[in-house]
Length: 305
Image (cartoon, rainbow, N blue to C red):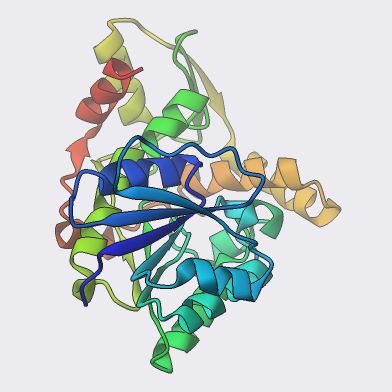
């Protein structure tokens, strides 16, 4: 399978922006950014990218927009990945003759019981979308793929989700702080996605797992931050099991925000209930990823802030 024309759905978000930037580094690709008519998306300055406004609720409009596209790369954020609109997009891609549908996952193992606890308002319908794509692929109508590298390392550190307030030199350690996790910087995700499009025959009809940082735990991040900044962090220890219990109560009571936050912390840091370590599934070599140690990843992050 040879892919040259790539349609990006969700080009203005963090993932879409990163993947477009990486695609523009390879002259074999022509890029089409698909946007709503009301979008204010502004593409990078390049003669290899164009923008098409389409009605994502209209099959005919989508088919017209997807004509002559070899692949669709879906970069819509988690909660927006709803089954109805995604099914319409997939069906239109099939009708338009698209060869490959690159699903919007970009998380961890969506088939794990822990992941499926999350409210769909937060994670969307990624499991149902994967199942539908697998059905269509089995029928020979379209091929699919997906990419999962865990949380975006750089974004989690910058936004404090990882438990670190870097400007204030404060750390929140959940549980022991020793739970091994798979995280990947967003630029690494983007470069891996491009490798998949360059060599699609190795990744067809399955999800690819990567991890951009090896030996990652909260305590390893803390040690790296202190070494790179030359300053000690104040540390607060939190009972992650209690957070899990409170999250499950919030889930039953319909408190989506609290449930999502608690389940996220639990999934990454609870040694008794975490699925964040998926190194047994990782195929870095397939997509040209070199995992760096925590100190190097933290240093790179701090230098680019």
